[in-house]
Image (cartoon, rainbow, N blue to C red; front, side, top):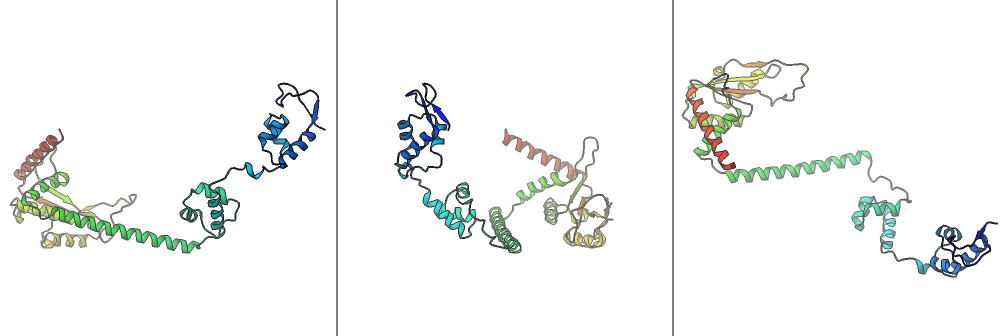
Length: 297
């Protein structure tokens, strides 16, 4: 039999000399445990102050009920297990009980995993329907916001149109470079609304329609004729008034995204005898820039 010697300083109390067998101590410890004593009481009674030895002596013996601390989550645990057995997922149990998923996982990990509620096809269908509802809601929000913004702006004054026209030209129009002074007014854009805004601006400035030239720029693989008629209709001129279309060469190694029926290239609008107008645009823009810097100072 295993012997445990009791000596001063050996962690077992050092009450007396001699030896006591492990089996004798275990018999005493188990007897005390079954009488309802706590670990502390057994430790003090037998003078066993080494936790490893005390654990070995009490191995397999459950603690008495009075020593168990009440657990406030016992009811939640039982309810979580009940819901899991009903086939609920962690998410549904969390929504039902309001506790963390980590706690739920700990409480029900020994229970069988419920069968999937939906098949793969059903799940995909539900996901698609959900995304469609989300997209519809976003579209409605977008339309509402756009309508509110339109009402905020209201009717545009001549001065607002004038300043905006200067801005869009300086952003999108052709500009002279210090190394190549070409004082020409040329505006290029693929957005029909931007084209309409630019034409309204030129009309505000008193530029006569006969001074305007139009030319289409488009990839050679696109519907060139269709694009020419589209832009001629946009600016309300006969197709014959358009200058020769500029075709962009197609690079087979390039993957173009501007394809399909909605792709109509760009329209180039040039103003004949536009040097004086170009210098004025430079001056107008210079003043706008000065005012912007003043506000940011």
